[in-house]
Length: 466
Image (cartoon, rainbow, N blue to C red; front, side, top):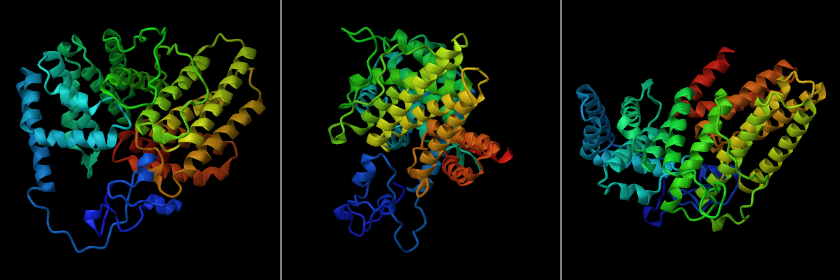
């Protein structure tokens, strides 16, 4: 929550309803940290800023202290890089020297960013600190840096955030160190997944792809992708209580999901999932029985099957035209069935799964529109235009009132928004000029994230130029 005022601090209640509940005309319990509705739907909870006298100047223990801490870290990383020897040991000493500052950043990760990459368990993270094995210590150092990196903004005013740049340089050097790669551990793999997510958000999809492929290779060495006893294939990360023993499976699935989203963006090859698929969700309607983040991640894993199937259809040029048309129709129907099930039951809780499955849906129909295959008629292409237009209206409509409530907090959603914006341009060129208002709403969503992710600003620049 950005700010939340209460006239009675001891009660823990705000003086008025949050903006989201007020906008949707929903009952709000006014809990200061986050009202129960926003927490249940994984929405950002904002309260109106109360009228109050001007704040006193920040003390040396406030924002100025944080600024000094940032500057000390930046100088520390620069000094270590200049010495160039025993790099890991020196970075570890820097973390220990500024323990509180790093702890504050990791707390921010768990409170805000963990739900987008839910692979690190708090209890495991605490236990790693007591480890004496060299490989675990090295993995913990890279994991700590990655968690801190993902919390930093892209820009600090008019310039790139200097601490983000320092953390990125240190993390990349440690992750690719031959000594690290030679001794893969779960914390090291987790740091790579987070680093790859960061690279994706900065627009360096090739770097993201190389990192995630390395994570998948290390995961196989560590047995993360191995089916459990009594099963012949890997299992889904089913909803339930989040425990440390689930970390390996979640990390493996996060790697697979990320690999597929990179492939949708740049066409990179991926390894097959080889897992049985079902087109409807089997999560119970009563969400109170489950941890919401575990439900969201389970739906992401289920959604990841569709990029697999879409890419397989597009890349299999040897498929006969009649079979290609039947495969398209079957995949289109199953995607719609999954999206309907997802949106009806869990929209807000599983927004990343929405972004993944809608991305696959749009990719599929854009391919049919541009295909010259005789399997598809002019009417087929027109129906694909209608399908994409319908999706654009649904997604843009979620941001009509409060753009930050749309799942545009992570890179996949930003990529989807850009994909839809480009689709609007193509549809407008084919006479659908009535989509301009929807295009403006999508631009507002990208604007909301340009301070956080570089790709948001880059996509806005591309749309403005063209």
